[in-house]
Image 1 (cartoon, one colour):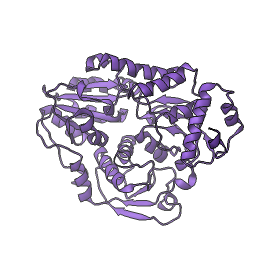
Image 2 (cartoon, rainbow, N blue to C red):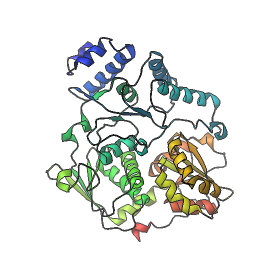
Image 3 (cartoon, rainbow, N blue to C red):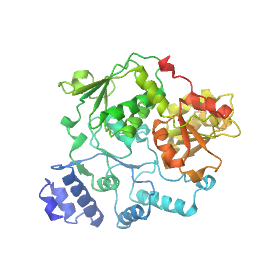
Image 4 (tube, helix red, strand yellow):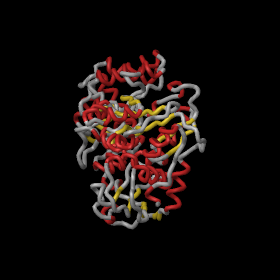
Length: 425
């Protein structure tokens, strides 16, 4: 380790932690951070104000061993820390054909994070909770959509993180000072011009994000031409697909991103390095290609990746009123317990369950697997661009993509119904 230390400027507290003054767990955590800092060419570390841990999905004994060992050593988080969605629904896993041994390991992983003081929100949308970072805060958030959202909508500063860096940062309150933590690295350079369109909904932002992500590479997109101010749900879906089809960690949207009141400010008063003029034809092509099947029969509808928000429930409830899911079709929504309780108080849950949908908390669509559904289940549908991308590999089913209204209409008759998007009419 000594060969790395001289490459990083250490604070007095850093040196004390390395000397063991805050315990063995903190010492190990800081060593991990310093090694990563060297690989990222950071010259020093930065104090952080919050962490969202992404390594909460059980992927095997190795990851469980690391987290349980830190907890057993007495590690405690020193900044507000929340936990991403986990691999099981703690209340309903027995009903979902989850292997008890797997469920036990998944629960142990979540418990170890809780033991260290992390808050069990079990959600991939930490930005809908009461305590969120402020403009300019340096944070360490994992979960790809949350990273994009925090940088681009909240104006907080985080890089795309790998597992273990997040919990190590939570233990010592420090992170490598590089990448999107630096002011000069947060300027946009790739201008995206959007044609004038009306009736923009979440499917538009899903498609737009997926299209931009495929073109962006390492650039920071600057989105121009959207006249309707997007709501939280639209920005959630945009953030999600930007990080699904590409490696985007931040975007600027004029008038939405705090650092982008004008195009000039978003670009840092420099010319763009390139421009993409989006066409309606390109948007329609992406919309259609997000589906991996054209089979008419529908067995399963899956929504809630990223987690359903209160706004999503508010949109869904009137769509399902007076309707019933077809007997041969399953309709599953994933969300956080926090949002579930909000939706329950608002009366949305009762209306949606009367439609025949079932709701699962703690887990997210991207934690699902084929064993959770009957062998006869062959085709699925979603309004999530992220799940349309990853779903076929995760659950072994062909997946169709459509708007939330398309999902409801299809579930009602047990057949795939996808309408031309309203924003293209």
